Structures are given as C-alpha cells and as structure tokens.
Amino acid sequence: MSSDGKLMEMLTGYAASHQHPFNVFVHMLGIPTIMLGVLIPLTWAGTEVGGLMLNLAHVAMLGFFVFYLTLDRLFAVVFLVFALFLAQLAGYIGEKPLAISGTVAAAAFFGGYVAQFVGHAVEKSMPVLVKHPIQANLAAPFFTVVELFKILGLRDELFRRVQREIRHEL
Image (cartoon, rainbow, N blue to C red):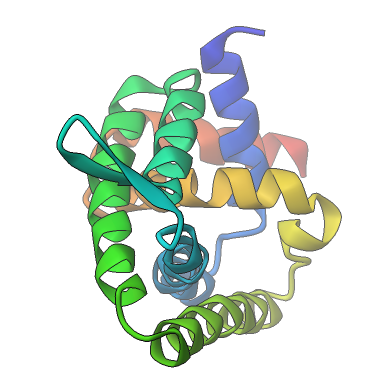
C-alpha cells in the first residue's frame, strides 16, 4: 500500500468516528493533555548528549515523527514542532518535586482520557481506543495535527476526499 493509501485509510477510519464538532474540539484539547501526562514521567529518565539534555520524552516524540513521516511529510514536520514544544513543557513540569509532577501527569493523563470518552458519548460513537488501543494511541497525536489543518482550511482537497470515502463506506 502506498503512503497515500495508508494515509487515506487512517484518515477515513479516524474521521468516521470524529464528525461531531464537540468531539473534535474535545480531542484537540484532550490528546495533547494525554500526551503531556505520558511525557512528564518520560522526562525523568535522560542524559546529556553533545551538550544537549535528551530524555525519553524527546526520544518518544522523535519515534512518532519517524513513523508519521511514512504517512505525510508536512503533517509529520508540524507534529515534530508541536511535540518538541510539548516535550519541553513536560520537562519543565517533570523537574518539579515528584508529588507535583506526578500529580500533574496523572491528572493530565486520566483527565484527557475522560474528556475523550465524553466527546464520544456526545457523538454516540465508540472510541477507537476501545477497538484498537495501540493504533489509537499511535495515531491520535497525528490526527490532532491533521485536524488543525482542517480547521485552518489547509489541504481542503484531502479532507474532501476523506469525507467522500466516509460517505461511500456508509
């Protein structure tokens, strides 16, 4: 399957259960919040490399970036900018005492997931997380970037194709 085919398959699968504006809004906030909750503990393990502090949060975000490059270069680069900012924020919070950073991480992680389930309840659709938990967690940050492009009216033809595919599948 070509990268375009793989991208379209992922976008249509995701978009089909994220049509309601409230659900999309909740995901735009909830997914970065979940990511922050995951990244904070990852910042606790790091080392200096060539004068730069590198931690597992940076490594994880770079791994996601490499995977996303196989789907779409532009979306992947925008993700990387966003992800490195989020990793830096996580590092700042991660430097706080464990009682503070751990509480923020747990609240962000669990609060973000609660928000996702509320959004899907409003949409009356099953969260992808329930059906495909690994795929959902790997793809969700990518879809946040994709949705941002859609909101900004960028790459409209891609989103029209996605909607045509969804209507065709129904």
